[in-house]
Image (cartoon, rainbow, N blue to C red; front, side, top):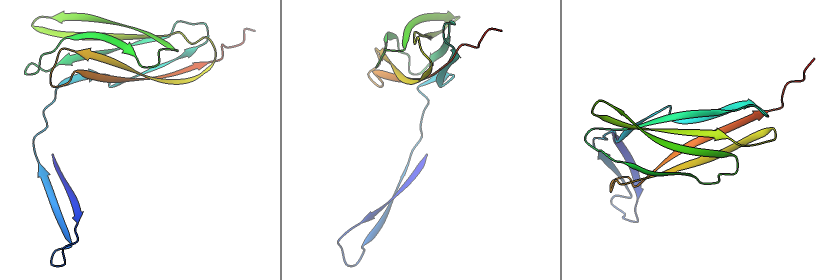
Length: 133
């Protein structure tokens, strides 16, 4: 990754300086999908899941999953092992009883010193139930 910043100074000889920062960015984990959209009708079950997989060089455990707001969703986190790889499945379920949209963030607490918290965005759209003929 390479980023540049223009710095303005009060120096007469050099009033502007461009600083460039270059470095490698390593992936800490994969989140699939990277956000969760819950869409459905009032009165019907609406849920979805996200899989969080630590990269082998940055192992961590998810200790807790909690929505910031929590008024419209309930969540659970489950550990899933596939061979040597441990992943975590976050499931969010809609509990909103009326039509409308909402947004929440689920905060995952981890045992990692590098990233003690991970945030997952949840978008909800609950529609009016279709009229029966």
